[in-house]
Structure formats: structure tokens, C-alpha cells
Length: 277
Length: 329
Image (cartoon, rainbow over all chains, first blue to last red; front, side):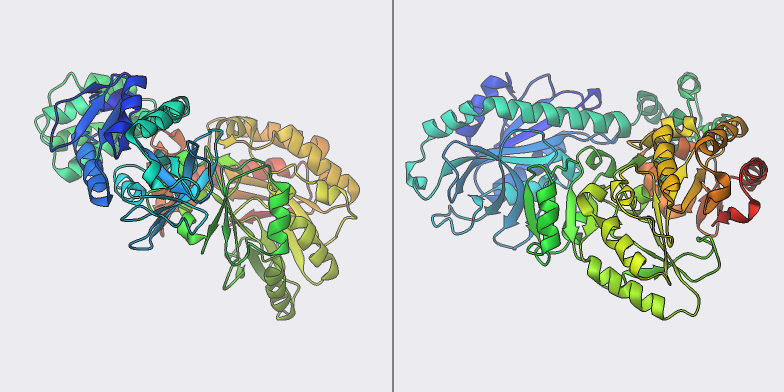
């Protein structure tokens, strides 16, 4: 997995292996050793893919697993993208949709993923249910994982970085019985360019975020040298950010060449330096 | 104007005003919601990222729609009130307290103008002295006018209710709805200005100073009461030169003897807002500087404030009768 501080990262989470295959090829992803029963793939461009398995529990667990693998100790965040198939009352089979509203049919909780992607495609509301939907009562898409994905991923990233796109696999004219693994693979392949564009935009948003909010290298170095309590870490991180904003990056670099006996003396030194700027 | 999405409260989705607003927009995804808070107040939002792709929320405002203005806010001692038909601003001024007040950068537009008018009426009738109503506290009054037609509605209302005065505070040049009608003497168009260097650094998306002055000049020539708001005053070592230039630019175009009023207001905000914005913009010099804290407010040092006020007030005397000047709290 790529070093988190080096730019943007996107975590793509799919439910099925057949949904993953065209994406693995397109993004030139390499399989990592399997852990906790999850198949995980990455490349050195900041793209990670995890196959969660079907249903809410599998999806939530997968998101938690992936987030746990990625350190956020220095404030960086990955973007998250759920790609998968969904039923829809009337949208054509194979059409890709960005989700603007997710309803968890179990809890009736509603989520609104902010529409951050500039992609020429329709948007839809989506109902996540425990079992496949055959009636298509509402003018919505239907799936089994998106609510769990959104709820879980939003714990690890700001909501702007969490997006969902679904490809229509069944509708009133063509019910779920017609779905095959080959068809799913083909639908994903046909939309892989659009998905690629989504991923690029999310990589950029994640990088924008990390450039601003991840802590500078100098903080990382010094925080390894000096023992810091949790509150001292917060205080020091704030001081480093302030120092940078005030244009004191040269002075910060000099600081790292010195040895500090205690966190208190380090913090006091930086406070005095800030006063002098 | 382009929005990433339009969220519409169920309660207003079928109203004529909402349907008209939707017709003024380019094709945009529309999402029905129960209450605007579901989207606007949710957790896990980043104002800064969201500002790149803001959405419009069309909603109905409930409860107290017209509120007492903070003490010392207004240009006279008459009863002062403010009302906000919008939450958030289409501009992106780094010094603005709204970034620290709201979790969301989306724009909420309250479309029940008639309810606002009813409460304006009640407040007007309850006063022995003519009240002043300020618009532009939680938003820019005019920036969304081509979509909202807010001013079109409310200037009409104030034209019919001369016992009340309206101040429309703005940085916008979207003033066509005002140009296209007869001036209304109890509607004051107040425009905010900062010097060029502050404008360039911290007023993203705001129309240029020159453009704003041209717009204000046109209104003054048409007979509208216009006002200048020098806000916020942000201390810079060369502020005297900057304000000297700004005032010279302003009064080259605006007739100082005919302005309604001119005011100054300091860069200050509640501590909680300041903290929220510092967290949002950890790389921003404006929030890394040293400030003073008193009674829950963050402000520049009293020495800097006094220095700026003294100097700028001296300069102002060259251009406007002093009776037109006030300090805004």
C-alpha cells in the first residue's frame, strides 16, 4: 500500500469478485496477501480495492478492515468509492448512476452523499435492503450494501470523500434472474472509463485534503524522537501548523537537528519561536 | 449559477416560487429532503472541500424570521432587526465568520418570503420609531438575486411600507433588479470594501473593487441611497497607504456628500468560530497570527484597532461629512 502522506488515495470497495476483475485489470492492481478473508488489491498510484462480500455486515466489516490498514496518525484521509450493481425501476440495464441519496430500508436512516464528482451521468436515490428487490416500487435504485458502505466509510473520511456509483443490473423488464457473473463483468468493463474518471477526481480531492491537513514531515520526525502524551501531540501539531502558516518552515527544519530532553522544552521552544515571527 | 445539486424540502417543492427558481437553473440533480438540517447540519462535512462543489438547498424558514440586530450594529439608534433569507454566501472570503458558524458550505435559500414579510409588518407596527431591517448578515443580500429574486420581492414590500427602512448589504454586482426600477428612498444599498491587497488575498470569487464601485456609482446616479462599509478592518503594517488608496478610489466614483452612510467594522469573531476556521484553514496566515481574546471574542490587539480607527477616520474626514460616519460593532 502507498505511503499515506505522499498524496491522494482512493479505496474502492466492491461486493463481488466479478465486479472487481475489470477494475483490477484497468487500474493494474496487484493482489496483496489475503487477511481476514478479504481479497485486497493495490497499485502504486494510490488506488486500493477490496472485495467485501455481499450484504451490510460484510461491507461494514470490509470498510473497517481497510481503514484499519491505513494509518491516519498524521491527519491524512483516503477517498472511498463503492462500485456495484443495483436494480432500478426503469433505468436501462448497464447504465451507470451516481447515488445522491441512500435509504437504509432496515433503519429508515437516510444519507446524502455530496455530489462532488463532475461526471456526465444520471444521479439516483438508492434503497439498501437485506434481500434483492423484485418489485421496484419506488423510482430508486436498489442494492444490498451502499447504506452500510456510506455509514462505515463516513467514519473514516469527511462525507465529500465518500461516493457511490451503481450500474443497473436489473429492472422491471429484466429481473434479477437474468444476472450472471459474465454480464456483471461486462457491465463494469463497459463503464470502466467513467469509473476511472471518478477515481481520478477522488484521488485529487484526497490529495487536496492531505496537502492541507496532513502534518508536515518535520513533525513526524520530531514526534518520533520525543515522547509525547496525547495532549502534547495535539498541542505540538497545532504549533507546527501555525509555524508553517506564519512562514517559519526554515526554522522548523533547524529544530529537528537539535535534541530535546523533554516534550515540554520542545513545545516551549516552538512557542517562543512563534512569538518571534 | 451552477450548483452540484438542488436539495428541496418536501414542504416547499410544489410552491410556485420554488418551481420558478428551478426553471432559472441549468439542469441540476434535484433531491427531495424532509428538512434542510438533514443536509446542512449533518456531521462529517468539510466546509473547505464542499466549497468547491456547493449545493443549493431550497427550504422553508420556521420560527423567528426577523431578529433583533446586535447592539451597535446599525447606522442609527432606531430599533434594528436583521433577517436572513439565505444561509451562507456564494463568495469565499477567508475572513468571514460564516465558515466557522456552519458545518456546511451549501447555500440554504428560504423561499417563504411572504412569512418574512408578515413578520416585518409585525415588527414595524410594534415600534414608535421607524425600525431598520438589515439583510446580509448570514449571506450576501444580492449575490444570488438572478436565482432568488429576493430583492425584487422585498424592495417592493419596503416601497409599500415607508415607515420601515431596509439595508441590503452586499459585495455583488448582480443589481439589475434595482437598476430596472425607480429608486426606493427607504432601501439603502450598502457595499463592503477592503483595500486591494486584502481583496486579492482573501476575497475569492468577489467582483473586483472597480466593478463594485461602478455598480454603486450607477445606483447613486439613479437616486438610490448608497452606503459604504469598510469591513473588516484587518491590520497590515502598510494599512495607511492601502486605505488612502481605497478611499481615493471610492470617492473618485461615489459622491461623498450624497452617501447615506459610511462605517468601519473590525475583524473579530466569537472564539468558537475562530477555532473552527483555524482548524479548517491550518495553512492560513490570517488565523495563525496572534490575537487578543476578551469575553469570548477574538480580536486584533486594541493598539492595532485604535491605530487603524484613528488613521482611517482622519482620512474619511477628507471625503464625507462626519455625520455620515459610524463605527459598526
